Length: 193
Image (cartoon, rainbow, N blue to C red):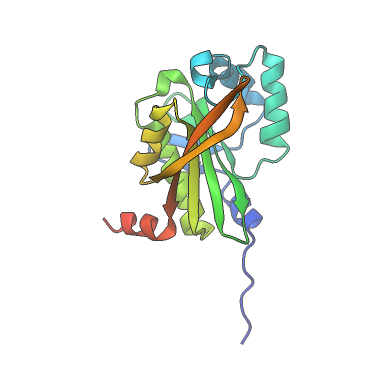
């Protein structure tokens, strides 16, 4: 009896390059998104905990080309279906196929904060991680000075597991990061509720 071939992580991600939720479309990021991304990436309130504030459209175009297009699998534009507008990004990063783990990260334009859209997009990425990729754990981190991001993590069922001191240097400052995780078992238990 032959065993069917196991799909690779990259094949599963490639098969799920476009995903849809009630309010959102998750799709690959492209250079058509430069203006929309620049709109929020140039906002210091949005970028303060995540990346250097973009100073020009050219910088945003380079970011899209170098980060989102060059290695595009698992990285999505968050598009608000009602307006057909790109309002942020979300990704499944640091994917470790051998150890069946990954990290989720997201950024959302300020005008769309507090509307449940980041958790909606994140739940779709968790579906991809656990139902399709069969990962064992997904983690996420946020700057300890950015508790709003932690609330998104809690809304999707992640649990805080600790503080990682001096995790990175951002804007010439040591940054402590709060770490959250969601195990496969906890995810599956949430789905039966």
